[in-house]
Image (cartoon, rainbow, N blue to C red; front, side, top):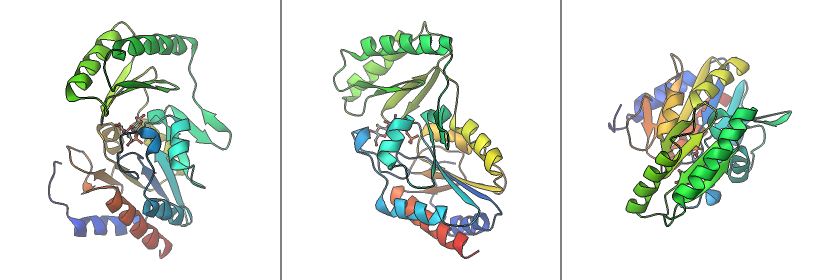
Length: 259
Ligand SMILES: O=P(O)(O)OC[C@H]1O[C@H](O[C@H]2O[C@H](CO)[C@@H](O)[C@H](O)[C@H]2O)[C@H](O)[C@@H](O)[C@@H]1O
């Protein structure tokens, strides 16, 4: 799917079908989906309408809501405010928060490679203005949104070259960000696990960035994939922006409550 005109009638019919499913799993990306993209990651917040819709959805019967983010769990908790009864998955699936706390397990080899990765990235970006490195439990993100195009491109090249000697890294490029992780997890893996653990018979997954394509790839019949904004996607449906996502979640909550 490319940037076709948005078919709102078809999307509404798909929402009605999804709302009728027996056990519903709603999995949502955070940045660019619930929150508009902003220059400083720590200042991102879900739109108030989105927060309201999330609370309506968690109150609906047989419905599980989860935020599946590339952010570290600490960062996701900070920006989302840990909404009541909403599950959180961070670091593209490497960190999961449940009743027993937050889990991320690195073995000795992964810990060693993470340290090497940190040293390599910090020294690679040091001379590039506006570029900075964000630490995550299983890796690091090189942020370039505040750099010039030239500095961003030079920093990405320097980062890639600096980590060449480190084995087993997963690389992901997103909006103004290039990430490396020592654990090979993805939003697709998370969705599979969540579908199984919740017994979901239908899944809504919404996301805006290339890393969300791993999630769209594991959706099947009876699920609804929602791409936010422009760009190639495997999702069957599309909306323009986080405001449209909030409206759609409110509609789904109303349909689900009336079921
Ligand atoms: O999977 P997500 O929940 O969408 O998280 C992806 C990345 O989100 C954050 O970065 C992005 O949003 C920032 C705030 O709007 C923006 O400044 C940055 O350019 C975006 O890439 C977060 O900082 C990253 O760690 C996440 O991987």
